[in-house]
Length: 105
Image (cartoon, rainbow, N blue to C red; front, side):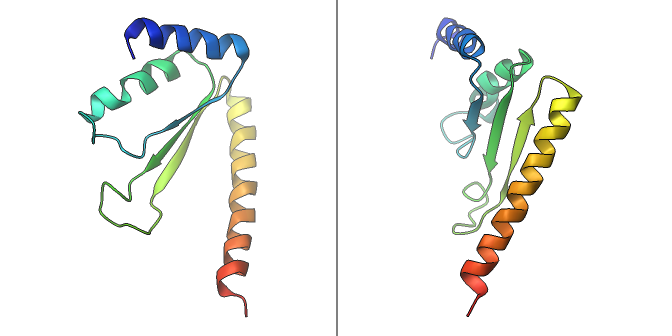
């Protein structure tokens, strides 16, 4: 995308109050890591809320494993605290689901 298209997209997401999820699973594969992350950085600097998902399994050649992280860009510290709380609840629920699915008799 051109710089103008990225600006238009950022403006549209703000107008519609959408929360963008950036998937950075293949960072560095298409070009440099800085070039891949440029739009994500500029978007997050606007202060609009977004999630950034990183997956390092492919970069570290550990296929079939899950190694990564989730970053949340929030408008206020209060929203960041509430977002963290919700992520912790989701993580707890997923742990229980995975343990039941794979380790039950």
